[in-house]
Every structure is written in structure tokens, then in C-alpha cells.
Image 1 (cartoon, rainbow, N blue to C red):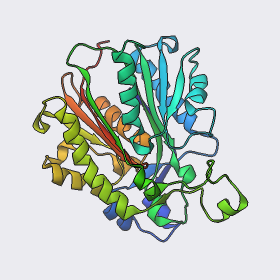
Image 2 (image 1 turned 135 degrees about the vertical axis):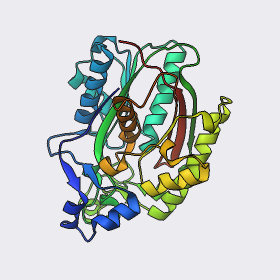
Image 3 (image 1 turned 60 degrees about the vertical axis):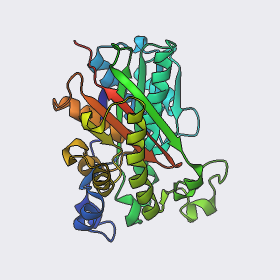
Image 4 (image 1 turned 90 degrees about the horizontal axis):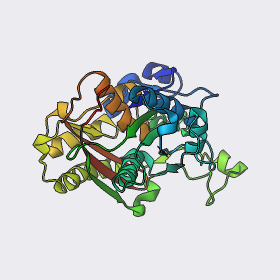
Length: 323
């Protein structure tokens, strides 16, 4: 594993000077105290490359050993080429297939499922999966309902074959395009290319129906948890950690209530990083590992949800290769 966040910290108190908000308002509604923000010369591919290089170093794997690279992102450097190809070049990976996955904040879970399929079918042996986003580039800093939520960062994992009954035990993926308008960046694609009008109307910024997204997230987190567990016969009580997408602390607390689990089982670091989209789940995993809270045999359940609408979960029996 590896993770990377920009050096610049933007606190709630600094936001108080920019927009009509307060530290108390943000904390009580989101659980966020600060977030990391990219500078003008740093792009999503840079975040991805830094996290990927840290994962390679931790795993003691050379770039030449990676068979496939997948980047999940909602904020690519450009429409094409893929952010994966740009990050691949920055990392020095050569002749390695690389592509992006676009499933919004569920992207990391989707990418894990794809990588799992490639490894299980023995198509590839070592797969580098990265969740990376720089969504602060796409927020309207005059809109207090959205700009306080997002932060930038990247998390990476290197996957490979492990002993039976370890690794990814089950995946569950879902989508409902009927909710596409609830969370989107309207302009910049083929439907509404960039123009003077689209920029003037603020259509290149994140647009969100917060109440509906909240209700969606609270509904699908328990659903995804139960669906992925049902594939294995493993009970929720046996799971050591549930790692949800870090969108809002109130969503996480609502999920704790609906699932009837101990709050400490549902891991959160949103106060430090905000909503980093595809990076949020791997950032938590990396933090858990580095703090010594993950041991071989632990069951961790990842659950994502986001624009699309998309949602999904992965159940993993933790296995870390010895040095």
C-alpha cells in the first residue's frame, strides 16, 4: 500500500475567511475539520504516481513487475489520454497496460473488483490499483454547501495471488443511472462542451442535491454490506473493520445505527482529509496498516457509494506478504 496527500492544508477557519460559513457549521454537518488541496502545478496523475511509487517501495516490487495498472478517478487530468497512462509514465512503468475507471466515489471498489477478476483468471499476477482525485479543482469556492466537503489525495494498493481463503473473498457492485442528476459536473463532456456560457453559468463545478445523496448513501451502505456478506456466509459480527467511503460523518454515523455495529468498527478519518472521492477508502486502509491496527486474518469490509449513482462493497481477509 501507499498513499499521498498534498502538503497544503485548508482548515475550516481559513474557509471562514473565504465564504459565509463557520468551523462549527462544517463540523456539525460533515465532521470535517480540514482537507488537503493541490497547488496549481499538481494534477491527479501526480497524486496517483506518488501513491503508486510508495506502494511499490513498500512492497519491494520493481515497476517492471507490474502487469496492469488501474486508476479510479473522478477528476482526470484530461478527457484523454487516461490519467493511468500519464501516471504510468511518471512512475517509470513501461509496456504495462493502463486504464482509468470512472465510477465516481465508488471507483476504488469497482477497480478492486476488476483487478480481482484479472488475477483470479490468471491473466495478470501483480496489479496496481490507485484511487486518485483532485476534486478541489472542480468546486465552486463560493458555494458553501459543496466547497467545504472535498479534499485531494491518492491511495494505492498492489494486488497479487494469496493463499486460499485470504485476499478478496467477495465483491458486490451496483448502479442506478436514474439518479445521475443528483451529483454531477454538468459541463466539459460531449453533452455540454466548454463554452463561454457554460463557464459563466458555473456548469464546470460540482453540482449536488445534498439531501437526496444523503438518503441514498444511508440506504445503500447497509444494502452493500449485507449483499457482499451473503456471498460468503461470514457474519457482520466477524468483520473487524468496515471502511466506508468518507463522504460525511453523519452518513457514517447513520450507517452505524442501521447496521447496529459498534462505532469503532466503522473507521473514519474524514476530519483530516474531507471527501477525497476514490482516494478515501485506500487512505483509510493505509492509515490502519501504518498505525499497526491490521493483522493477518483480519476481515475488512470496504463500502463505496457515489455519483452515477453507483455503490458497492468488497470483503477482504487481510494478508500481508512477509518481508
